[in-house]
Amino acid sequence: MTVGAIVLMALGNNPPSAGPFCLSSYYRLNSIEEALASKAHQTTIRWNCIEIFYSGTKAGNIKQLASLNGLSSHADLNCHFVICNGLGGNDGQIQTTEKWERQWSIIPGRTWYGSGQTIRICVVSDGKITRPTEFQRKRTEALVEKLCRKFEINTDNVFYPAN
Image (cartoon, rainbow, N blue to C red; front, side):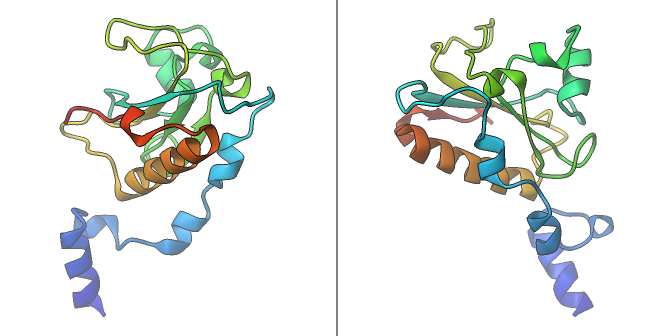
């Protein structure tokens, strides 16, 4: 059994110290349906595009990312969802921002030129040294799938980080 766990960890890009993939940990996370809930009314015509991007940090959660970006409040964070990597929030945890709760558009920046109908998902990772974890990949995939289905977003309008 130990040999099997080590082989699975090696195939999953996990160092032995990280431990084997644990399904019970995955199921302890908040549900995708909980993450999609909002205070404001949602309509299928509200959103037409999804962009996934890296936070550019090795760790973080909504409050930490807001602080690192010089924002006075986490309500000002310029994305709709944050997917944690275990350093600042549970690995694979989906945190919902105030912009999603109120169904507000994000403010376009110099690295993003989407429309006001774009849902932005921030994956806590620098994309180079700190790669997204297996939980983050699975949860991002599940979140994108649910968003596409709920808002009738074509998969051609889902944009992932270049690397």
